[in-house]
Image (cartoon, rainbow, N blue to C red; front, top):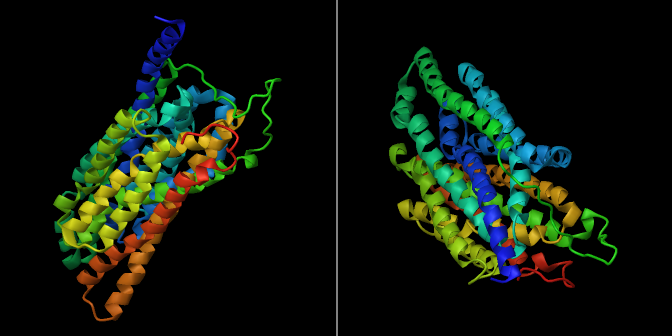
Length: 447
């Protein structure tokens, strides 16, 4: 065996354990993130909210990425990736504990506070974990490693959605029917009972997160740093500012749009199914459909990238599929339309794995700051889904004013709201074709 082959083999072996550990972290924040699909209709019921108000669950989770991303970058520069991941788990555990007094008071803003704190912990965790896994091995196979992370993330999300769907949405249709005829006293008692159903699950979640935070501190994770885009003879990069990387800023915009459509696909599908008249007992599984579609596509990415298709081609195909499926959602009805929402998981799966390495390539000493900017782009999940909810509410009011009955107006408005996806996927397509090359014409890209 040649020296280069031995080096490649040793490098591969040395990354197996870190990859498994980071995959475990992606499993954790996948579980926590994707229970929002069950939380949204649950919060809507116990707090008697509109569609737009209920989607503040997603906003509270994802807006934390804007508020905390730059502080997270500062923390990581001080304590490093490993301790940063551990601290992120501790913060997430604190957020889980806030659900206990929130349930006792049945106060929506307290629930949102707990969700925000968990989002802050996930911000720190993701600001550390995503660039870490990107630069842990060769940059041209980074999408493959991130796809493995995606499988762990979405399998956990599917489990979380099913578990919390069973815990929180069981009997919700019957409870809604009871609430419509109950007296004020009976109504308060029933809503309080429903709210208290979150206490035990979140106590368990907090305990697990605290334990994992301790374990990750002792995990065998090597220190890694990114390579610079340019390496002059004196070893110093010629780039002096983060603003000298236009492909980075377009990557941030692309990720913003992507997270928005991903959250819509995963977090609205249960409520969408219910709006179409599908019983909650069946609809509670719909987020799992979306996530399993993503897992299957991630698996394809692991096999095909980079040997068969490039990261760039994967991104182009994803954007085109997103546009096609969005049109299919709007122009179909009933369960068929729900299936196309779930199919967005196929379109979404490889966007995140492709955008990260395309955006972080060659940023060198700017990698941690750039990672913070990309994490801030996760705020797309805070802004775009509520815009979908607002669009649904406005269309519903218009349809009712035109004489349509409320049930049909809700279903029709919910379907038409998915038009918001189309411009998002167009921007992703632009980045896949042109945007990722800007400012990199003199260096090798990942095309």
